[in-house]
Image (cartoon, rainbow over all chains, first blue to last red; front, side):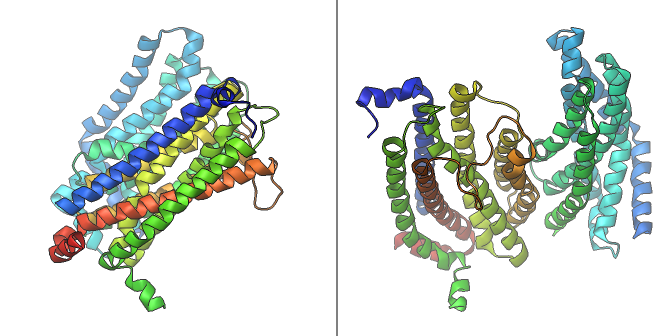
Length: 47
Length: 222
Length: 246
């Protein structure tokens, strides 16, 4: 463990916005893609 | 094969000559686009010189794009394209002739006008010469890649815009080296490497573009 | 064994197989991602020069690798379909494209957010970044072309030609940092030399890359199942109904 607490972890040495901004958008993209594919499958099965 | 090439080249050039309006429109579009930029960004000479490379190249790209739908559409409509496909003549020779005619009627005039526009942007004599060579080398690349793009979207709904979407990313290397040659010349560096790379691009686009265009035509008309 | 293997070239035969494969790849992806992120955030030390912002590497590099790799696989399937005239190959290429585009976007986005604190700029027009951006446009163009052509066979073959022409871009992205000495840093990981980064950082990066790969396979298989149902609808409604009701 490198971090002296949650606050330090989220701050990322002052670069928190950049680090978490990257990971958040990436997670969003992955979640969106998974949801879109699931929806496409649902529609393909229903029609 | 050369007979077929010569015949199709002659025919397409004749068609282009009879409908001078088409080629002229492309040229006028190029001049208008290049003239719009200083109006939009302000005509400060140093700034103009800096953006000359990019503006002239993008203008040439867009103008070349405008002329692409005409490459195969007319022949598709009256059945000539189908005849070309089933004839005993090798398709690459026929397509090469069409691309050559396209370049002679569109790309070459663009290349000859580009230095004049360069004057408008305050480019010095050396840079104008480099610009001429760069556009002379780059416009055939546009014609070749454009032919592949036009063949891929033949008869498709919304083909004009789709062709642009397909062709423009593939033309970016030509844009980078072409504009790079001009920028290098303006900063006093040698434009030679950029022009050589542009030449290499042309050498690669020739077989690749012709193959893609022929394959795409067969796919479209089967 | 090979006769069995090639029987899966039929979309109808492949559909249930893909369905069974998806959970394996999906769970692998999830577990590997968990492990990779743990290594990346709790094992790997603070970087001497970059501080904590370097931790973006654990999503940026895997995404960039996948963006190039998926394009090559997509072009391979598209090319196979063109040569062998197999429907499923074209469907697989269609299934891979959106995932490839997604990873390209993630690579560009994370790269921009990494660039700002570390090298002072969100974007620069160097060879690698420009080619990666072109890669995104190539994916989008491929997807647009396939959407625009109504006949699926023609769409597959036209798309294949486009994908193969665009393959030239991949070596340019990969080798651009060797050919041009500009902003994007050179290769720290090579097949022939020892890596120039700490082992824990490298480990985190490789585990995340594996996770991304497993994810890409899972999502593409799921998408190809939807495509199979959509395309087989016109040909064999009875089969589609049997799959849906199973």
